[in-house]
Structures are given as C-alpha cells and as structure tokens.
Image (cartoon, rainbow, N blue to C red; front, side):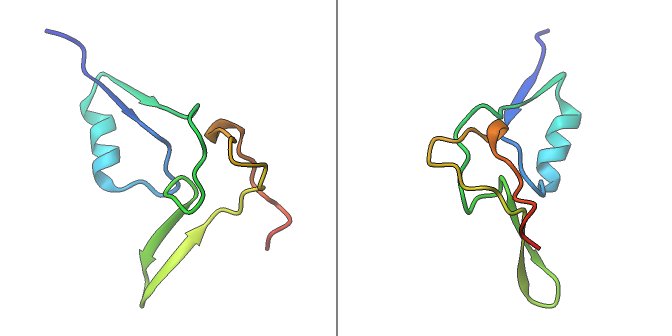
Length: 78
C-alpha cells in the first residue's frame, strides 16, 4: 500500500482537523514557500471569548511578494 501525504500551509492557530490530519498521514508537509497573505489564518485567528476577537501576530510589511518563510514578526508592536 502507498504512503499517505498531507500538505498544508502554516496557520497561527490551527483547527483540530488540521492537527488530526497530521496524525493520520505518514508524511505531513508544511508548505511555507508560498506568498504570505495578510488578514489570513497564516498570522491571525478569530476566537470566541465572550464575543468574537482576533489574535494577531504583527508582521513587518515588506511588500506583496513576501513568502511565508520570509515573513518577520514586528517586535515593535505591543
């Protein structure tokens, strides 16, 4: 029988199915050499904690063609 593979882009706060899929397959690949997308699950997550809120990792803006693996956290944001 063949080997099973799952390929996903990294997420800041992955859903349970994302983690369950990683457990089910033989090889789990994080595809991080694609374009970084602002306002996406790559660096933010919506949570429901007494009302909907966003958890966001501040990322330095370096242009439109930044890859996920090249995105840098903006430590000047508090």
